[in-house]
Image (cartoon, rainbow, N blue to C red; front, side, top):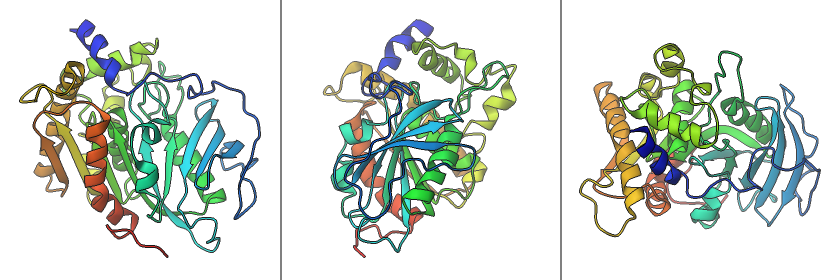
Length: 342
């Protein structure tokens, strides 16, 4: 059934990666405009050698960064939405919300497809949208044991250090993502216990070793003209590598994290309004979410779960679920569920 998966995985991200969003797709040039409330971040270098090579303010809250990443071996983009009061409060630090993209998309997807800019305008949080690569799977690549791009280290080590060094980020964090980014949210939180106070996955791939799911992941990788085995190797011969990166297998480490998990049944019980490919895709990830939430229940780990009938693998559902998950994310960030200024 691999050919079927190749056809349907085109919808795992809303749009193909654009030239401007492709990792390393343009040369790194230092640029700043509009920053107040502190010196430019250009030139900031953190442990491990990651360096900010450009910073561009596109409005009062939005900052476009280019980060030279030793972990990935490329210069990668990162978009920030700073709190409304950030420039006026140089004396304080801020909690950080990480938002992760889906497959075959890029770091601009959250601002392109949702109301995240207006939603966070009255909330005291730094929102960071890092590039996760064309597959949208934010992980360390195996590459036949030689190692490859490490998007996990890029986001959690390099970007986090830059936020703390130049944007007054505090140590309260939450992470959320769609599709492969939903995988990333639960993988990050389980692989780094205590780093995130909350994690949310919307239509995420949350049990990567479930039968048929490796085939789905192989198709996502192959669509980007990459060897399917280059990511984690073989599920059989590199089973330890797969297990270490499977949120289902690492679920025990989520104890104490605020969790929100949602997915639809897709084509099963769905209505007629959603595109067929979106319903098929949602049906393909729903079993992984159901299996994962069952595992949490077996472990007696609390989670807010919304497994709804129908739906599609699409942004209108993910925006709705993000809004619904805000109380859990806010709690993990140390913020009130309702906004406050101060």
